[in-house]
Amino acid sequence: MQIISMHALYREQPVFTIDRPNGRDDITFLHFLCEMDILINGKKIHTNPGAVLFYAPKTPQWFCGKRPVVHNWMHISSDVLPRLAALGIECDRVYYLPDDSFITDIFQKIETEIYVLDEENSEIAAHYFEIFLLQFSRAIKSPSRLH
Image 1 (spheres, rainbow, N blue to C red):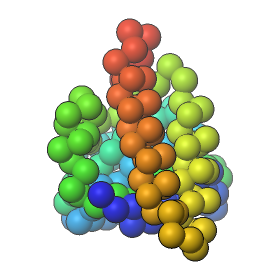
Image 2: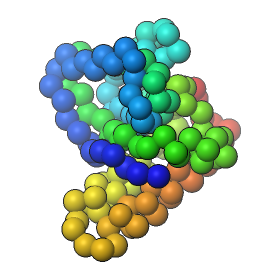
Image 3: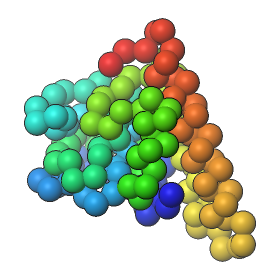
Image 4: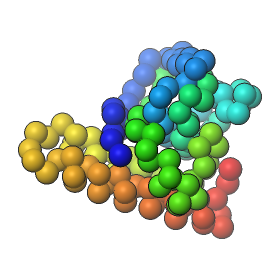
């Protein structure tokens, strides 16, 4: 597993749009802290703040925010797909978690490690990523989740 790129609490300008008709070769994780319009399974839908999803490799991606956009995002190598499946995490599905605050907390830690230049940074970032996946899996199995 490799984190290709990512940012925590990343701010985009108003009327921000990503349009990738052929998707990407990796997995894209998105956590929106604002309302967004997104393409999921060939349909454009409106999401509320807190929407999260993993786009599978090669899946068309389109998302647009009319106001300033704040989101946590990550591109991850596709070899993590079996781990997602083992944890019951589906790609190309919008989730709303009962409490999504752990995402920003962990993403900030991962981002710090990615930009630290020492011998342990990639290993520490990988451990934080595994904790993120475990907490995400726990959250989607919570009886109070909405999706």
